[in-house]
Amino acid sequence: MKTYDSIIQGFYAPLRDYLEHEVVPQNETAPRPVLPFCSYNILNPRLVKNGPESGHIVTVVEGEVTKERKVTDVEVVFSFNFYGKSDTEAMALAALGEEFFDFVGESELAARQLVIVEVTNIQDRTLYLGDAYEHRIGFDVRFRMSEMKERVITTIDTVETEQI
Image (cartoon, rainbow, N blue to C red):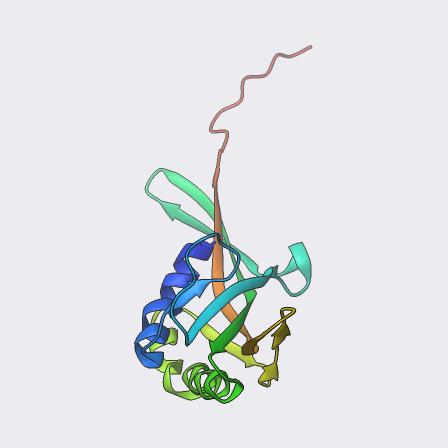
């Protein structure tokens, strides 16, 4: 399976370059970037249609070794939030992010084996923090990728039996 780090590496640099602002993990203790910026979080780490029955198994012979491989389409849902000094600044950055995932970055992400399944509608996710507002606008993106599992098959070449 692709690791979550490889999924993040798939979208991180192209998204940051397109936004021209920082893209950071949401649930980490680190200094907060200068506004405006984008954060991401994994909402659903592994969606597989039809559970264990999904995918298909093929037998592969490589020299003396026989293997079984199972290829399955797996989906992962990420949440993206866009922060700004004002709601309009956050909305403008979110619109750029949505444009990247829905159109501009589609080919580059596909080349990195990430297929965009769905980009949800942009939502106001602003928080009231007691004496001020944290202006944030966000949406979710569902990515699909192929997962390959493999196991070596051990075969019995000869059998010795005793007659009774």
